Length: 242
Image (cartoon, rainbow, N blue to C red):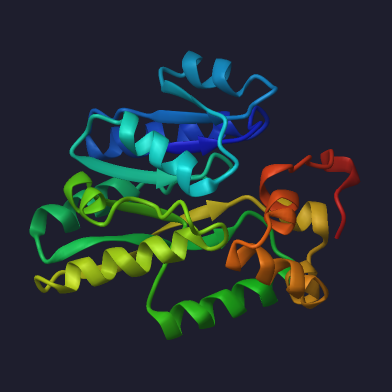
């Protein structure tokens, strides 16, 4: 399942990566692309690639993700953002772990598509937080029954819905002794467009936006989350900021 908001520039390579992973795993994979308030060729590109296209007008990432999960018909669900590239080995590894039992699902190791001092520092910080919480994101994978058991993504959570999902899926698995794990040998390659748009050190400068971020986290208003996620306008590559 692929949520996508105006992704005609990056969606094609993401869908190509899923196709490679499906072929390597010898799986018949249904790809569902949720075209979220798109004004570009996202839906057209998805349909041309053979994906099921679902339209969503939600301004809530959890709602967009849930729309894709609801539309999918498979017994297993994998979610990955449209600007990210799945590892060729991701579906092989996820299928093997779920088939073996003892695993409720998990996330992936995430690596950036380019490097700089600021990006390296940001990923080091995220890695430290991941080690402390023992949660991972990037690409989620689990049986549909387990995702439905926890109610999917929480649509009341406006910021950090992915980690909230991971936390609840892990807690659900612990009830019968199953673990939540990360695919460390099948890393997902993440787009650096937020760094291109806001600067490579922008995560460390977010302190000045902390009051707005906290208001979005508490659900008081959506000003910051709308600006950072929903109303994104990417800079052309030759104008990217470093």
